[in-house]
Image 1 (cartoon, one colour):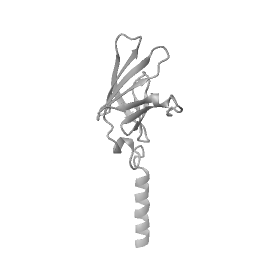
Image 2 (cartoon, rainbow, N blue to C red):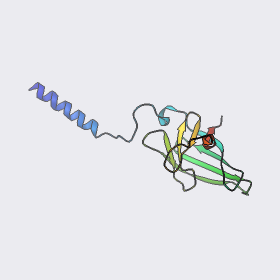
Image 3 (cartoon, rainbow, N blue to C red):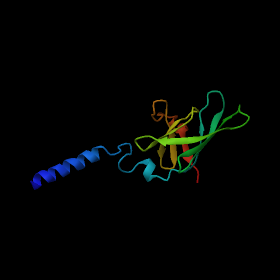
Image 4 (tube, rainbow, N blue to C red):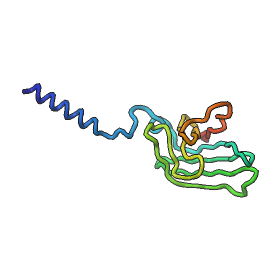
Length: 135
């Protein structure tokens, strides 16, 4: 009888564990292991201007301020504020905006701008799609 009770308890614990929230990644991720809040800057490629000067400030409360200025053609910077969400893998964020970029991978003191498929840019020009954290 004790064996049946123990087996029943074990099955109940396994069932409860299976129903737990699996949206949060297990182990160290950019979200829980890095000092990600801060100001990031970079100069992105531009097809009709010199470069796009970008500043992205990420706050602990998942709010952001995104500033971009098209150097060589713009008169004043564009500023967008909003909220970002962490994706399930815990290493990427998505901005709640239609302005590009909307998805980034969070690394140690840097953000990698992701393409429309959520992948990092590759090749010799890939370094142009990185925002560096300012100290």
